[in-house]
Length: 119
Image (cartoon, rainbow, N blue to C red; front, side):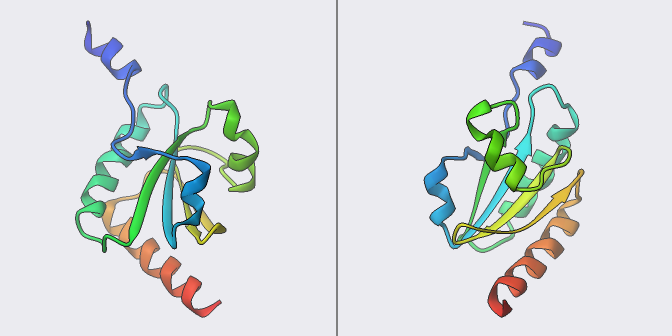
């Protein structure tokens, strides 16, 4: 198998999102697509973040081409990919669009958690 074909089979390192995951207190969803090679960079940055944040934060991924989640993706304000959706007990708090560095993601997590605590 060529490296081109391997890239076509690429999937994020995070677990695949299921609707029941919205019950988590702290949930971050990586919205991605297998044809978008930029998502590889976002996944690498997320892996760095996951090792630095508390275990209470759950990370999942949604392939935007999965028609089962079309309405959920729209309601999550995913205008482009890669995107990260931040949720607190089923409530969508915010969505960031574009590749973020691991430092930017950690900054976003701090802001998100503060927003959830004080809203």
